[in-house]
Amino acid sequence: MKGRSFVVGAASLATYRPVNLHLVTASVEEFAAEAASWLAQNCESRSDEPLETELVWGDGEFSVAVFHALSFDEERDLLESAKEWQQRKASRGYHAITGDPAWGGLGLSKEHARAFAAVERGFEPPPRHESFSVTVGLIAPTVELFGTDEQKEQFVAQFLAAEMLCCQLFSEPGAGTDLGALGCRAVRDGDEWVINGQKVWSSGAQFCEWGELIARSDPDAVKHKGMTAFMVPMDAEGVEIRPIKQMSGGTSFNEVFFNDCRVHDSLRLGPEGEGWKVALTTLGFERDKSDSGGSSSGRVGGSWRQLLATAEALGVTDDAVMRQDLMDVYIHGRVEAMLNRRASDLAREGTPGPEGSLGKLMWTEGMTKMADVASRILQSRLVVDTGEWGTWEWGEHVLGAPGYRIAGGSDEVQRNIIGERVLGLPGEPRVDKGIPWKDVPR
Ligand SMILES: Cc1cc2nc3c(=O)[nH]c(=O)nc-3n(C[C@H](O)[C@H](O)[C@H](O)COP(=O)(O)OP(=O)(O)OC[C@H]3O[C@@H](n4cnc5c(N)ncnc54)[C@H](O)[C@@H]3O)c2cc1C
Image (cartoon, rainbow, N blue to C red; front, side):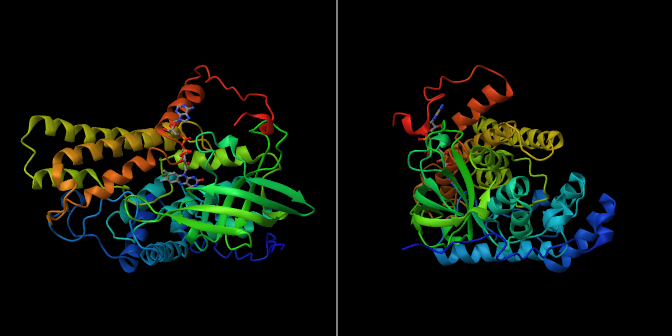
């Protein structure tokens, strides 16, 4: 049976437009003062204490999780509260401070965005969720770059305001690092495309209304040339989502199967055969950790303060080697912040460059260092819950940190990109170069 087909523009609801024109002309100081007053009325204050002294051991919640280990309902509730907060910010344009006013942004400078983030750090907005960051930070800007006018009108403002969520449908069981090898097929049939195949590790697919799909449209072309990108409604007939159980307990990732799923050509993102360019752009946004958009989402997987507080609570800070390890984590974090700041200042307009790989690598190395030091501080407390506050929770960091060394391109792959595209070193040997995808041995 043929599935439903979807046409772009059918649900165009781009309603976010800048509301407070005086904000658009404000100096950084005026803008920060307005933001502080608005946040005070709309959000819980974190504490009256200065940030550096805010962690009181044994007091309140302690989370250093990298991924959520939640039930479906808990994860959906967390997402809903993050969406609600983003929409409240969108009513003032605070969700997209540097963004294009055409899509509800304020079109202000990075200094304005950083000033907002600094103020917001004194408050306690709801925690973020990966689907939310993917939609707002990766897919909205990709549609802005590659979408038709109708697609931009349909998606960009709503994605930025998290009215709708979108997942990445890139990886397949036989195509992760070598994404260009992917085999999910898109075959043209009149004004529609028929999609058949499987995706895997699709984060948050069960909570998303849309997916950015990269599919093989021309098997006769060389592998990087024969792909096309689409925006696919996740409730379309022929789309089946199966959650995967993680070792940390949650089910944030999914397998997604396409069985004769029909997608209208108006949902093709970018030209036919240019899916690789679209995918690289989304991945570039994923690797770019400079975060100039004014987010105060804090660090995924805990902070230096939490690590130090754990070491102090367990009485290990007199140990000279431990002190050195702790300083190593601290210095890494400071260097990473400076590197990201520099990358943000140097960022070219529009498409992210390969330099984002440096930030991604620094970030995952920092998380790994933190996991190693936390493991040495906690020792057996990491595997046996002693009931001591702030100890057992580190397991969620240690088990989750390796995931980001793989997601968005593994550490090894970031090093290849830096070598080849930043430093200009000779490329790796490529045995499938110049061969049509269908003839590549597999
Ligand atoms: C937490 C998480 C979230 C994810 N979310 C999504 C998502 O939302 N959507 C999506 O499409 N995908 C997602 N992925 C999938 C992710 O993009 C892939 O796992 C990743 O690209 C690696 O592919 P793979 O798992 O097939 O490993 P492989 O490609 O099989 O690699 C295995 C190992 O070989 C190494 N390797 C491979 N090729 C080379 C090389 N040329 N040089 C050096 N080393 C190499 C790799 O570094 C790795 O260590 C997610 C993954 C994780 C872990």
